Length: 427
Image (cartoon, rainbow, N blue to C red; front, side):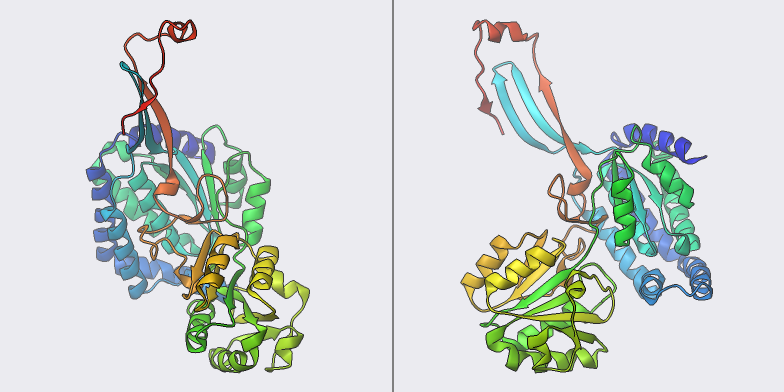
């Protein structure tokens, strides 16, 4: 099938998928976990083909790290599948039940969005996370992975197809895989079939999608995350959290890119944290105040605006919590930002005023993740302020509909005053 045919098939499948029981949706996800374990050697062999191709094409180290699958990663993927399977069914929840009149009842109920187009780069584990969440939430999905992960994506996709075929014919066509660059352009034009686009990849990819489709887009273009070390911070804690935020996995969107340090503790803190960061091979760039305390490359204005996704960190000394907040709201990407402080007032001000989808106190920015937030997994992280924000799990893949049940009621009776609305909350 071409892209249009796949989109049309996914649209029709989405109507059937909305009626499949949670037991069967969960059954598919658990069967995928079983098949992934059974076929682990084959999946790793297919992944190796991608890795060899990536080396030959001199792919960046950041992309290469994201591409690698290992037995440990597959165990993590299986654990994630089981977590998603174990989540309550998100479909059909009545969030509002209101009596408009004694024989006229209104309900607001959660329903799947429909067809979700998801474009992701490099990480084949993303295909599993996305597919499992879409199945659990009753959504059809059109998946476009990067060509660098072509063999891995095909292998993982085939496992989903096998698991769904075993379970129920109504799953047919609810997952579609497209592969070429041309498919992306065509997919972005199919607003009559695709209800939501979720991009996971580089800034350029996200911005291209946002600029070239009428389909609503949920995601984030940048991951410029900050840790602010306040004058009342526990300095040992601040070192530990800063190093984890930068070094635990520097290639991801919730890794720290800029470290902000209060001037009052800069001379004590910066040598401590710089030593640990340099031990972890981090290249340090700093403003003039930082340069006067530790050895760093001079930072430029561009550094405050840069998502490195690498072992590079910019450092700035600030005069106050308000100055840190102003810097974050000016240069940040509204993704994830943290404060390290024992001052409850400073923490409260930071949490209330930093305009980001995740704001944290005394912990690593790396916690901003669907799995770690208990969402089972995530389809991505959104910095949008409409529909869903932060790590997007099952709830972000749902919308709602109103259901009104009457008994021959007509508006004329209420407009004329013959009847009056009761507007009584039932739920």
